Length: 326
Image (cartoon, rainbow, N blue to C red):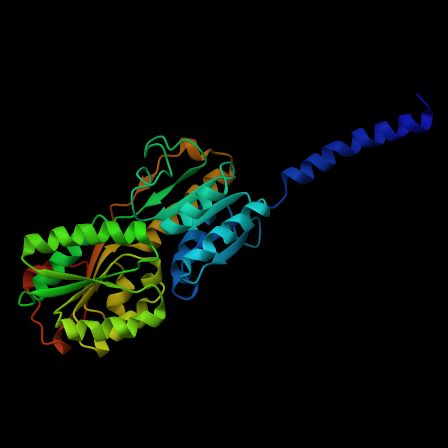
């Protein structure tokens, strides 16, 4: 071997550990994919970051997060998921069932951590809750499971209402169909007439409230859906303005003037999703991380709204509430 070539080989060998170490120290990138819009999801994103920080990852310091918001447009999710895969992000964190399904369809290799309602086994996202297998794991909330309970709570506070409505998003058929089926069964057992109303964009909300008047509905149940969760303040104000007794799955609804909320604390489940994402960044495999199921459910009652609606909230219901807004 010529001396010049020998020197090049030695120099290359000396440089290799430096290159390898630089690659190991490269900042990991999380792709955050959401069906909703960022405005009212800020508390959940903060909770997700806190979960990451618990594992030692701080955005802008030793981890990068690339956000993709579909703004309620389910048709955008596939392209957004494909873009994150093309950019070779380290992990994809998904917020909502449609986002998880889009990410799963886009990659079978990049780890995916979901926060969602629904059954991930039935949807084909994981093989089982205890042993997910594949590249997907995450956190499920009880938004769908407790949907019948929301109708029951509304009936308790408005016992004279015989006609009620459930608002679903037809653009999210997996969740809409499940909650419609469960609500029909609950309404039948309570002797109520239930109407299923649809809203797939924010522009549909005015028509929904006009329809409620025509139906003479005495109450409204919001299905758990990212479109509605991203418009909580607006929907709370609309129900107060139109004097509609209504129940949602998130506390922020009651705080915005809605009558009731009953569901999982989303900040808690997003924090869990953040910790799982951090664990994967540290080298754990999604296949070995059991799907976490949140069991933390909160009932919030807005007594000020109840008084404005002329409703007498039973003391037994107040006693069961986690929070009462006066």
